[in-house]
Image (cartoon, rainbow, N blue to C red):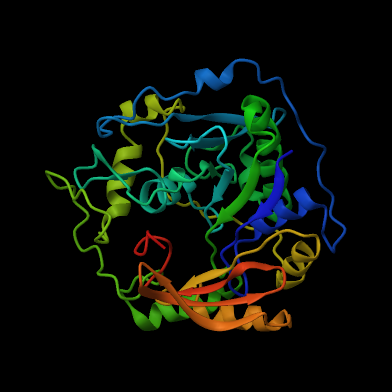
Length: 371
């Protein structure tokens, strides 16, 4: 197995299935939980079958390999998770392996993580062509985007009851089974440094969030300064730049991923793709701070960061969570610079490595890509 390291976004209640996947990997749960036995299937051959020749509308001279497909995590239920994997254009044989999970719970890492945030491409406003993301994470790592749990995006189950019994434990089981079997399919990554990453949502604060929505009206809670998409109709031509946030980007991605030729290129079953799915989440902890403490005590490196214009994962909650850990401060809050420009403030504590950061003028990882 790879070296177990982690990079987590955080607030007082981050996306729980990321934490519980880490618990399984590190065997650090404070609670007694019943996890299913690991399912491992033969994976001879599928790696090359999953290779993407070209994504429809992708720019010329793409210099890295892409893969997409399904990993079965429960053969009896017929449950399989979809992944999109991009290797680094340089040093792919030595760069670390990163697993990216979006929050919700129940939102797509393909549609949001890969296509709108940190993947190699963005969708143009015509909904048919792609342009490069100059700040893509695969420039420094090999990145897996996992759609989880079953029912999100292209991931599915042949047992409809699965969609009514989703929670932290089942999602963590499936994510771990995915990872074990994915590494059988891509065995060259078994010895790499491994990072679990993701963006999080304050799900336990759902009722307060709904109250805020009703009071605030038409506002993007993930970027309170962003304009609202008033006309999601696709446009001729292209946007072609990640320097400007397009509030209608969700519509472009949804159109693109529902195109038949795109679904064929991704090796998926023809289906209607949507960005998020609602679930009756069956188990969720009141707080994940004890879990973070256990992870740090086991030697895992944890990084928490928040954007200061994100009203769902607010900076105030992240700072409160960090203070609640009651760790000694090695380096107090100080400015963080990039190319001599102030980008935020950071704090360093033992086990909180590299540090906790507040990113200025950033919501979910869309605006400040270079950060």
